[in-house]
Amino acid sequence: MVAVLMLFLIPFGGGIPAGVLLARTNELPWPLTAALYLVSDVILAFAFEPVLRLVVKLGRNRPRLAHATATMKESMDRTAALYGSKGAGPFTLIMVAFGVDPMTGRAAALAAGHGFVAGWAIAISGDMIYYAVVAFTTLQLTEYVENPRIAVFLMMSTMLLVPLLVRGLRARWSKRRK
Image (cartoon, rainbow, N blue to C red; front, top):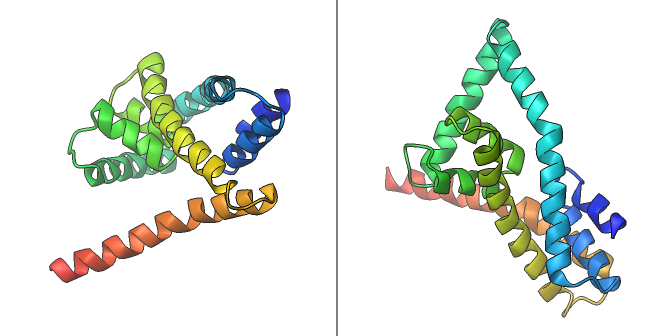
């Protein structure tokens, strides 16, 4: 169980397929596996929040950091606009966390004025939806691919390449519209 949690704590999506397959190998029920992923998100929240708050505090006094913070806020606004909203409401913020990562989702929630509990609830909601999609897909893929290492490699490759493909297609479509 601890090994599954440790895999879920890996700071990029590659821990999900490996953790899900390890949980299945150890015959952990799926609700327990999902709960372990939720625990990993809560641990992340308590580890990342002080860093986020420190960056915000330092950004008020240091011009370069203030510029970086303003750039990130502008980036969050553009990302939120991709999800069909000018304002960063809860649904938009959940989609940011789903589409990027929970830390970015939390940063966007903070920029939108959400406190610790609400901000992390939003970010973790998006990340748990992401977990569900990747976990389900990984388990389905292993029905066709017997080697778990190949399944994890395919999932990680897909998680990296599909967003690049979508961005490229989106850019191509937007050029055609003009």
